[in-house]
Image (cartoon, one colour):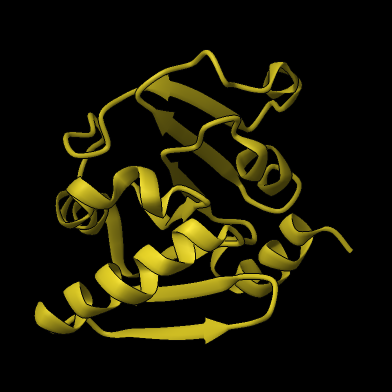
Length: 154
């Protein structure tokens, strides 16, 4: 089983038949994979040059060039938000991204930070988890030899 399939299996309850946002999507591999289980997936990134061309084959996925610290979505637009394999890239603005995700995710929803990259794992362990503790966020951490997952209650 591929890592991305394991991730989807782990977060399936919070994405199946729901509206999902992928932040800092890069190639949008996760968004494309989520298209088979989610109702609709919006994915955003600062640039589009990495985007997988197969995204056009997904009727329920929409990509936008957008700053995740100032998203153009209405409040309460999504059931779940996911940051996948991007913690290192957004670490300098993670607190702002969390605030924006909390704004656009409906109450009772979740924000996931998931990574299989060692560089991200270090950022999650050394910076993100202490930040979440510092702001009193409700979250759980699941560590596995393949990836780390932080589920934050919105």
